[in-house]
Length: 82
Image (cartoon, rainbow, N blue to C red; front, side, top):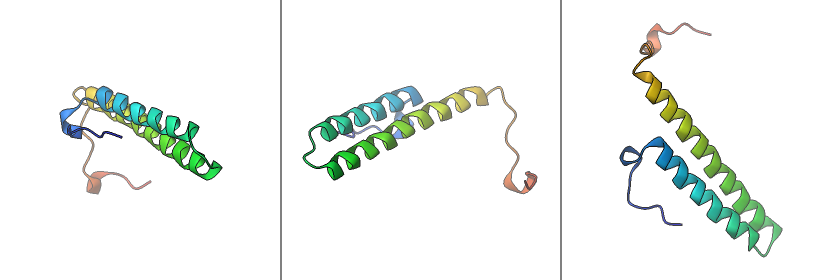
C-alpha cells in the first residue's frame, strides 16, 4: 500500500477520501486472495476502517467549507454542559 508523500494539509478532503477508498480497495483485493478466514476478516475490517476514514474526511471537508458562513464554535469553557 503506497501512502504517498502528501500530508493531510496538502490534499483536499475529496482527494483524501479518494485515496482512502483506494486503500480500502487494496484491502478487499487482499481479502479475496487470503488463504484463511482470519486473514480475510482482518483485511475486510481494515477496508471498513479506510471507508470510515473516507466518509469522515468528506464530512470534515463539508464542515470546513461551510465554516466560512457559520459562527465560530464557543470555547470549551463557554459551552454549556450537556
